[in-house]
Image 1: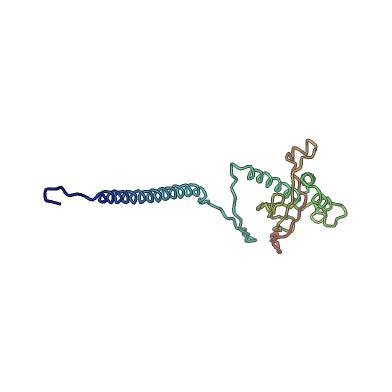
Image 2 (image 1 turned 45 degrees about the vertical axis):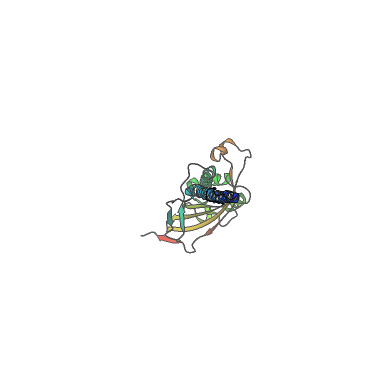
Length: 235
């Protein structure tokens, strides 16, 4: 090659340059794709985390609970407000009211209202509960309240709480105050009440007092405290 002749460039130079350019472009494209995938995954994870947090926010709340402590037995119970919405809670409230009416009618002793209380507790009783009630006031029973209390004693009932053990059983805590000429005796009780609702036909006057057909099938009470509270009459 002379000085006047132009330099001849090897064709492989261009091909090598083209391959290098394609290699660099491919590397950049791959890197860009990897980072794009990572960004998409991180974005999806962030959206999922925010959505999960949004779903969990209603679960975290603070409720004010009022605790009641029985001064005699020390029993602690949380007062539960009635929720405006929710059929189950409303049904429980109605059932509680029926149980309270039954216990008051069965455990109250007042000679003036004895017939009314007996009729109402009989209306709310069936099966074994009805048999026990009839046996309690049977003339042959020496523990008949009319024999043990007589005409000058009054027993009043104060309901403390009703707790549902299942959909057919409730536990009731109540106290009875027996007032006579000798003084006042306060006793504390726990009762298990098994109940049901029936649609069997009944007389209209019975339906007025028991419109939903509430019936107690079994009733048992036990003393919550062994020693009753006695208050003697001062002379």
